[in-house]
Amino acid sequence: MNRKRTLNKSLDKYEKIKLRLALSTKKALTFCEGCIYLDLEESYVYKLTSAGVLPYCKPLGKKIFFDREKLDEWKLSGLSKSCQQKEIEAATYVTA
Image 1 (tube, rainbow, N blue to C red):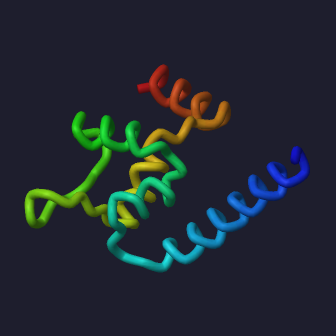
Image 2 (image 1 turned 180 degrees about the horizontal axis):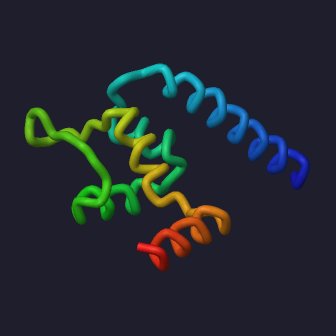
């Protein structure tokens, strides 16, 4: 029983990876595809869209669609700066 559960989890992970790879070539994603692409729960994605944090569009006023490239930009918008970048900025700030 335990072995079967582990196999199902692995299969699910494999299927998700395959699906994400397929989604990486699409320009527009449905809501469900966007959740899979972002690897986030649907309820959390709804919160992000309703709060205006996540870029989306509703062309007919009902269904939510995502621009994959904008999702990529959003994912990378919170990049942390390296120590070296912070040191350069600090030095520039002090000398300015």
